[in-house]
Length: 138
Image (cartoon, rainbow, N blue to C red):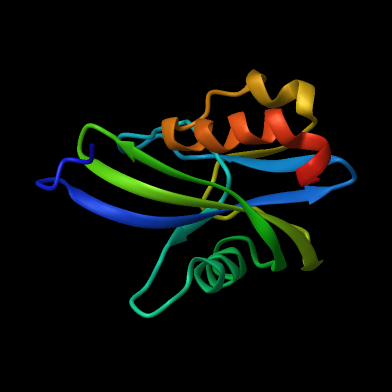
């Protein structure tokens, strides 16, 4: 159950697929999620759908245009200082090359490599769904 006293965020995450691998990015060394890996994305603005927020955020953060293919998982998670609803979507690149600006590192991961990085806790729910449904989702 989500603690209603904490700030609650609605966030979309892009599981960007290319050549049988997915893109992951490492957060900077600040805040509760310091140095954790995540599927990039961002907070929904008022009136935005999760898909619209995702296209906007990836364009802003990674200077790349994506196409949202289908949902993978919706994860509810409670961190120490906030709670989150994370909407994970399979996406593909339309244009751009995902240059990192807000993250400190990035990797393209095969299914067998998903457990090699230290994921943000909410993202682990998406990772688990990917591991179960890799062939179907990608």
